[in-house]
Length: 134
Image 1 (cartoon, helix red, strand yellow):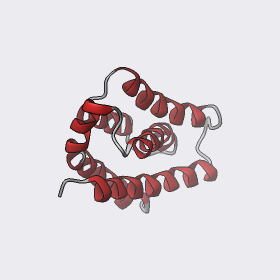
Image 2: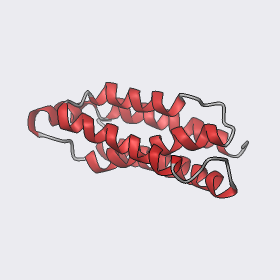
Image 3: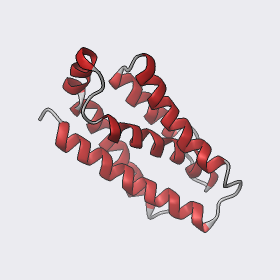
């Protein structure tokens, strides 16, 4: 568990960076559809859903942390209609895919959780770097 704490903090910081960095692109999206980083955002939403299930299952004291991160993402993006449904659906799919497989924490669930923390951090960093307004 100790090994994941820095990555968890890093992911939270990167999600905050993503939220701040993508504001201009989000405004652009309201004028002509989804932003250019939509695919990455959907993948990130799915990762957040998986983490929302896996982290507490494996003993992390993060009961609502990943759902709260998803809510923050939705608040910043402010998607409407079908786009909001797609993002929410991706989160729910990530959650449900692990809920159907794992009832207790196993080494495989721990590994999946660790990989999602790392992948989510990289994804958030890449989107913030590529589409950020800095």
